[in-house]
Length: 284
Image (cartoon, rainbow, N blue to C red; front, side):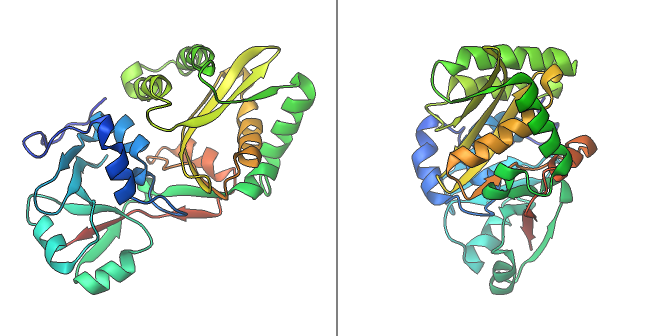
């Protein structure tokens, strides 16, 4: 459900799928870059954040953070003058900024802060493949494999129908209204896997799909946007994550932020992240 905030609709224009190439080129995805640097993330959550592409002045994407601040994501390299000019156009902050923040603060004479709930969880793919350090999750995955002999299926177009069935079952399992979940965004992701450059996997037990995962990014860096599974097969998650990490060829995997949800935070920590990357906000 979109949050209540001042609309940005008088500025710029709505994102279109044809913007993917230019935005992706401007926001290079690499290790520890914010998940929002993925066009798939921007597109799928454009309504929740009221994203607009502003092409006048310093090109940027303008939106609303989960806690209601108007923010700008620049699409060009910063300078002191153009960042300060951008911050004078009704923008509360420039967000998100990753590891470059200290350099930017010093060079541009700005200040920075961050919200812990925004931080991304980054995992070393080789460690995730072995569930290193995640003793409880490793035990679950082994039991799942030994007891149910699951099948791992790389993503292809014919996975969509089965994944949609898993998604509907997941929605019934969680028992929350659709507008309090990300089911709408996940459905759209399944409809647009090709257009958004998504890949992932499907997990089956006795020929029936029970879980799936969708990610975007580069070969070395994958961002997991959705991971859904039926409640009765909860151990499918650690098995799926370890299998995907080992087969993806990636070096780093980003599980995105926890949104301040204690249960989600506990689940992400249980997989022993290599780093929890802050997303900084730059201000005057």
